[in-house]
Image (tube, rainbow, N blue to C red; front, top):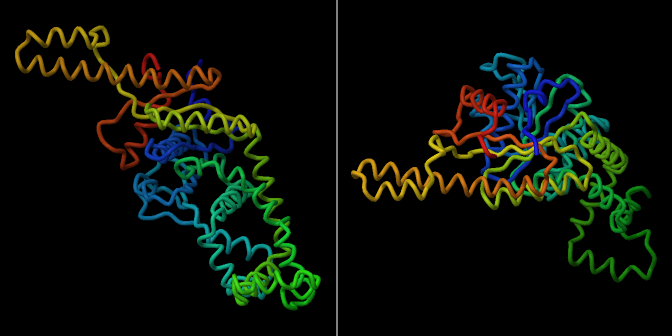
Length: 371
């Protein structure tokens, strides 16, 4: 077991991408922002923080009114720090504009199926996250890209984006839909055999002729772009496996959060993704460790009311700390090669850049004892 050297990670010019993942409510967004502030201010890295989580916490803590799909400079930072939030539809629109002509783009944007897919379809966010990360990396404008992923296990769904996209593009139904578009726009089922006609009629009754037409038009319009989608997603996937990328799993010393951390660590290992370490937030400390919970409760029995109250609070805190250490110990035993950093529980929520600086400093100092 080893301690995570966050400063060494952030100052390493060979590290170009840091991906923070973890379950909800463990301080993942705050951790990503704090890492960005420290990388820019302490280590002089030209840094951009990309959040895929639509929550507004990142913008608020960085002193920005809002975040959108374009990197915005953080004026309160003493360094080159930018931040942005993934806009799924805007990213999809930008991809279309970049890889087709204006007339074809206009047709795609007007298609009802595209309008639905680019805004609400499951999986589109993961595809677009891969697109945006790949785009940021290809621009080579930033020394360091820090990615704040969505909460829970969906945070790693973008790892599946290339495989999912390949299955979608290679699916039999999609090939049937592409075929008529390639053949000059004839009816979606006009090119299949007579034995398929009954199924075609059933599909039209179930889905509706207009939906079939919209889908066929959408697929036909994007046909020449699909290979590019897949190629770029697979290239970004390879970047995530490369030594220039470091994954940080963020957790709290709670059973559910550590179970999620265990899942993330196992999944990253299976995908051969470089896991740099575990960050455990909101750990509690005892400032009189020599006084056990039992001793404090025994002393409280014969003490005055004020002293007795203090001793009972100490006993509860000791019990809490022991439970948190046991929960964290299980992860460290399961993954002895994964370095760990800890951040003590803060007296108040972090809501500004000074608070982020404190978190960054805490991440870079000695971990809380016995963790």
